[in-house]
Image 1 (cartoon, helix red, strand yellow):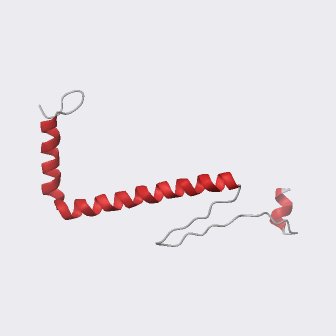
Image 2 (cartoon, rainbow, N blue to C red):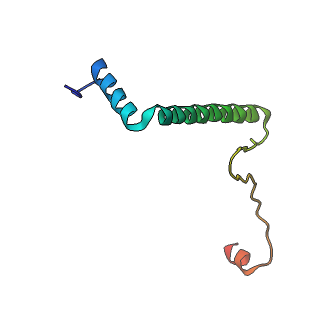
Image 3 (cartoon, rainbow, N blue to C red):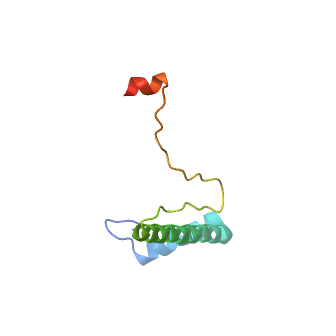
Length: 88
């Protein structure tokens, strides 16, 4: 029986692995594994940086090697505009 209640058997897991290898191929699986590994590594590094920043009482710096990330701090500036007068 492929999936009964509970944990699948070793034979079932091997059969699933073979089907996945046939469907996706080793090259695509190797690429996905590498991507997953680098994502986990970046996540752990970010967590470590956040913990270090928390210990030092400094804001964490956002860094990404691909794409654009804007790290900013929003400040409220009161002016004489009608929008600000209505919200006060």
